[in-house]
Length: 251
Ligand SMILES: CC(C)(COP(=O)(O)OP(=O)(O)OC[C@H]1O[C@@H](n2cnc3c(N)ncnc32)[C@H](O)[C@@H]1OP(=O)(O)O)[C@@H](O)C(=O)NCCC(=O)NCCS
Image (cartoon, rainbow, N blue to C red):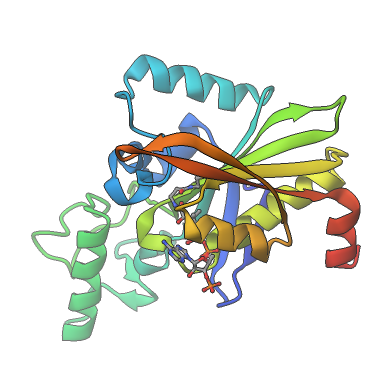
């Protein structure tokens, strides 16, 4: 599985952008479907209004994998908490520490990792966390933390819209800003776009901060344009043009 881009947040956390696909979901053991029913994640958007059945997901994944209409990328971080060294013949290592060592700190880290990833990653781990064979394991090298997409791509107008959803556990750490920076760069430098835009409910303060951090300019407000949690809300629309992007990023 190959990533398209990687980079670091301002806080030094590495992230990876993978083509979003069935393979990516399987390899990361992603539970991203649950994001669409999460109150915190959906409070400012229209995800989860209708149940997402298999047919709907299949159609969406077919579209993502076709790579034709939209560019959909999964944002991932490497699974540092539970890195298993498979080169070792008999035993795994946890953050570089041997699982055979009887040390309370290591035990705590190991259990935390198991809890966090609800994992059947290591056979026999629950019986004896310090003595588990590491051959033929289903190793989750990456954790899926969000999705970004470039949609409504129009090569006549040279325009596209972006969208994003991040798992709530990873909000406020700079991942959205950094991942979208790469996506916008891809739009201008690889796809030869001229204008990239996006909009969000006025109640979505985090998203508006991200727009501004990306150097986007507010172009307008659509009054009462979205119905959220029992009432109509305004949508604020932001955009950036290619020359503004180049100037801001010194390209
Ligand atoms: C909106 C969203 C993409 C922001 O992602 P993120 O990874 O938290 O963004 P960043 O970490 O790059 O943060 C950008 C800034 O907004 C702030 N922020 C994030 N969520 C916030 C919130 N709910 N309220 C206030 N500020 C918030 C961050 O602290 C950060 O500010 P700082 O640079 O001053 O510290 C994410 O919250 C999300 O996926 N929400 C659910 C889906 C959604 O609303 N998508 C957009 C639909 S249009």
